[in-house]
Length: 318
Image (cartoon, rainbow, N blue to C red):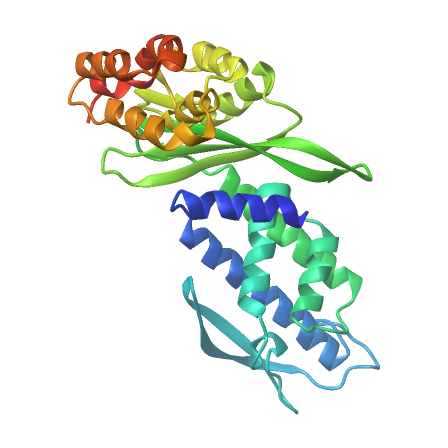
């Protein structure tokens, strides 16, 4: 559903993240080549190498053209015809081809590929006359490319790994249900951030998180020294069983939201500034002292109890 893809894109935007550009560019190249092949076949009246009385002409090689997109230049081998001419309709002026194409690829990464989504893409691109077999072929090949990327080996150590979850509305068996979209983000020693994996689940219970973490390990996730997440019991149980050698820290953002939930609206700004002072300290001892000294009366117990869980980085590698 659109809600799911939009929620995922908004999450990436807020955290200044993006799906792997090389993957998006290669997927865009694959889909556009398949679209051109299907459109040319419809214009010719016959598939490649097909003998048909409806055939109007034959293919005659390709001409190269670069499609300039926000992902960079996407090379397009545009088919040539022996008689007549062909130009991809999705490249015509005022077509919102690039946005529609990226939306479908991103949705495929999160939710999987379906003929309905590809059909919607063709309509958005203004492509008509594409038969169902061509739509199925595009769907199958995009599904193969997305599956290969989702299961790609995770090269290099990721010192820090951050887990988060969004609750989104998904159509399932004809009903709209809430599901958990869990996301793993890895940080290399160089500071580069990678989206390691995304998965949809019915809830954030321990078995689901455990399966997700084991999948990351099987793909080669290694060198993890610190894991950051919300204090969800299912995730913490999964971390203990799968990543026993890593230290866990409660996410500061979730911690701050928890504290502010106990504060009146007029005091939220002052308390938020106080919490930020805790994390601005130079070491863990000073951070804990700041948490105790600066706590407001109604939040003192909460801050004292939770401060240690949010100051783990003071003991972690930089």
